Amino acid sequence: MSLVKSFNFLSATLFCLVLIKQTNSQFELCETKAGTFNATIESVTGCSDGVCNFKMETWVAATILITPKVTSKSLVVEGFAKWSFLNIKLPHVRRDGCVGFKESCPWPANQTRRRLVWFYIPYLWFEVSPTVRFIITNDKQQVVACFESVVNLIK
Image (tube, rainbow, N blue to C red; front, side, top):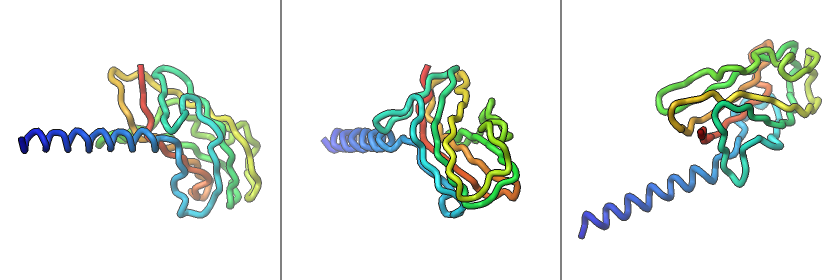
């Protein structure tokens, strides 16, 4: 009987952990301690009701508002996917943020801008739920914006 109770407890615990993970899957701001930006995510294709499901081999669009608190002569955009012990740089992310955001640089401080950002979801042989992180820095390596979320990559 003790083995059955242990199994039931373990099953209930795993179910709760999966449920918590699924309800907290929206993109969140990261690097907020830097104090160098305010940002908001208005919408992300494939995210609804706290869950982000991205179909492999498709493009995903995100609408963001960014208010940098620092001036930027140039912008550098990087995207990473972390899963287990792997940390992979995302392909097809335009490194030059001025070109990617179709902006004229320099970006002045305290000026809010709304941008539509596209990123590509590559094909994998298996479905996975990595933590995805996008970070935008300026020429002085100060964080201009940072977004992070656990997403579900589905076929």
